[in-house]
Length: 256
Image (cartoon, rainbow, N blue to C red; front, side):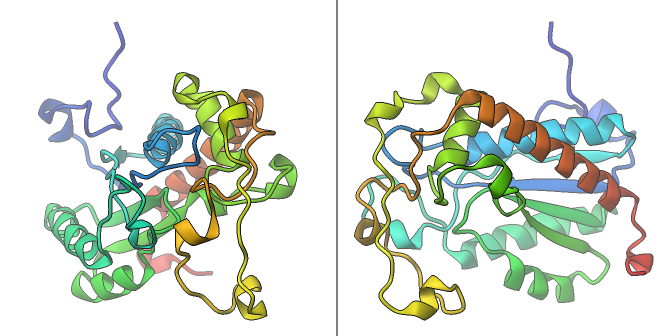
């Protein structure tokens, strides 16, 4: 019989919760959307559950009192409104959800929250600026696992959606949900004509049906489960250390 994992709110119970002084709450936030032809719509959710869950386990076993919330499965997909069943939450809706959840934590004395972002369309920084004013005792943090990867070490092909990285991770975590890579699109992306957008100091939302035929950007066909396993181990070690660091830090002594 599998034992209850006390660091997962969805699995633990009131008997344990009421007797635990949690140091930090972790909120994975993902999306439900097409990921090229070969990956499931739940790709971002699978990655969030897998990486955050294993990192939370390691942090818990290292002595950090972390509590991992269930992953929010819907994110901002305003650039994909014409792609069938790509589900969208407006940023204003995300702000309302965050405010309600932070209110609970604040009044119950859990003063640290990490948003574990697993979707490129989500961006919480301006929200956390606003909510930090409303809840001045809260330490509010956004992380992005996909920005923490050493791509030179792990990736042969570029891209940022249903690419070699995501395909390798899902091949490791849920291989039964991945179609043969021969069925995947090549992930070619149409790039903007204006240089500033290529250099990333100008921004506009990418209209996905215009820039890619498959909803993927980056060729996934060099992905393997072994690459995914190595990447998963590195990511979970990195985030476990981070969760421990945040759990132990005194917000009033945050800077050297």
